[in-house]
Amino acid sequence: QAKSNGRHGVCFFDPTMQAALLAHVKLEADLRQAQENRQWILYYQPQVDHLGTITGVEALLRWQHPERGMVSPGEFIPLLESMELINDVGEWVLESACCQLARWAQNPLLRELTISVNISPLQFRDEDFLSRVERVFARTQVPLYRLKLEVTESLFVEARDEAREKMLALKAQGVRFALDDFGTGYSSLAYLAQLPLDQLKIDQSFVHQVLESQANAAIVESTIALAKSLNLEVIAEGVETEAQQAWLLSHGCHAYQGYLFGRPVTVEAIEELMSVH
Ligand code: C2E
Ligand code: MG
Ligand code: MG
Ligand code: MG
Image (cartoon, rainbow, N blue to C red; front, side, top):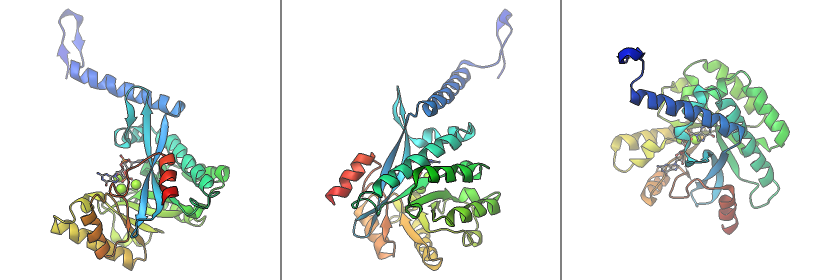
């Protein structure tokens, strides 16, 4: 809002707006620095089967900020998207995960593990996405059937046939696909059935309240049924209690991810977990 500022003329921003704008500009500059200096680290969260055996991990990005310490992706992924930096950072994430898979492939204790990598819809829709991904695959020589790409329903709201074509191209090379945060988007079920998916991830918002809310229980039950009838794997996200896990198991969901089984941790910590199991 414009304010008259005596004989110095017009001041266009009030102080709080100016502070917010400056903070935003600083954050953008910090993010460019972060990409230049690779201030990124991948944490890995275990995914377990009904026996508690770790079958895979999800790669979750963290920003090691020089002053602020570890920053969570919720705070900076949207900004990376608006800055179009998501393509470069996303490539770093994919390459790091693929290098990890290639290393694990050498170790009998670790070589069965899968890694799930989150792909932003903007990153997936970028015209260079396929060629970038294929270059990463060529550089890392990764066993592609151990790689799962997590996409969300929002990818299929616009230009969905294009997205489907890209999925098919990657699928043909062995890559697998998970639909993340399932149930929170607006995609049509009819269309989802035509996608080359391997796994549905039940969103944590439904899992958290599964014992308290009839509605959430109904959503989780129908997601499990849908996965069965479409021949997809199903995994519950955000499992925090034994009671939630028991409920999920008794309703036919045999794969879980959540704090009950482990928080996102460093690669060393994952390897440690695997060697003691
Ligand atoms: P997501 O892909 O749905 O990942 C699951 C999020 O839930 C993670 O948050 C994880 O730490 C958290 N979580 C797991 N288990 C539990 C639980 O039992 N309770 C609770 N309360 N939370 C749990 P995180 O790491 O902060 O990531 C948030 C989101 O940021 C991710 O949601 C994903 O959408 C995005 N993200 C993370 N890494 C990347 C990345 O490399 N690329 C892109 N494009 N997005 C990413
Ligand atoms: Mg995810
Ligand atoms: Mg999720
Ligand atoms: Mg999410």
